Picture 1: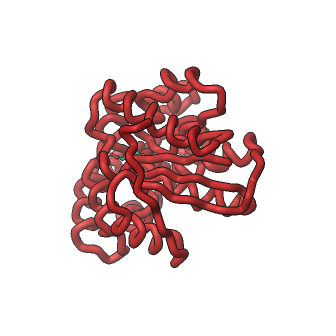
Picture 2: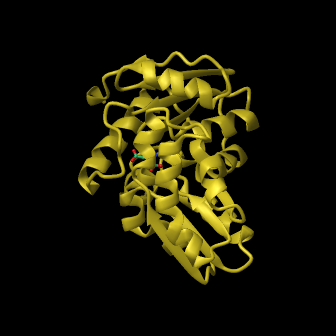
Picture 3: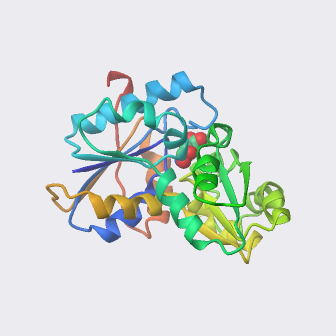
Amino acid sequence: MIGIFDSGLGGLTAYRELHTLLPDEHYVYFGDTGRVPYGSRSHEILLKYTRQDINFLISKGADAILAACGTVSSVVLDEVKGEYNVPIIGVVDASSAEALAATKNGIIGVIGTGATVSSGAFEKKLKAGGADEVVSVACPLFVPLVENGYIARDCEVTKLVARDYLEKIKASGADTLILGCTHFPIIADIIADELPNVTLINSGAAAAKAVAKTVSTAGGNKSEFYVSDSPVNFDAVARIFLGGDTVAAKKIDIEKY
Ligand code: DGL
């Protein structure tokens, strides 16, 4: 079984890709909706949340885990990974490699949460891989907008926020942009409308491809979804994002793990 976790809906961007690549797998998804957002949390709190999320997925029988959260992947994953006997894959490496392969002018933009941008994790990887310039912008408001369903391409509120956040990326001349928070691909069309000639790299999908290449578990062809607060909103937005598939998430008490 492959376990996937995020602070909320964002990891579904990785789940959707992974499910397409490995449709016969058994997936357990955990969205920590009771404690979203992660992107404004301290290192210490992120360590605690990440360990609890992983412990929960292992308690469900995960043989491999995708940390489908840019914040967790950037800030604490290297520290936590070694504590477990199952492979745990984050979103930084694969999306950085995709961006480096895609850029023609060597200028790469990164958008993510505040914690992700402050960590410099993407920037470090990209510079080590030969990027000439990396322009990073924190876009924290995208997270609650997605969690609250402000995801339609013509949503004026999200469009306005996107215009403001993406101005610096536009001005930099970046030809490639990493959506370094897994919530952001859910509003990829709004971002693309703002940056029409820029190649967007979906960090969750890139990581899912890496998982599909390296992981093979017992399978089982089913998906289970768990959240740490009321599932109502999660189910509704997840359903739109997953193209109409019914999602019936169950609530768990993550503090027990
Ligand atoms: N989707 C997560 C990320 O990729 C977390 C967003 C948040 O909770 O702030 O960073």
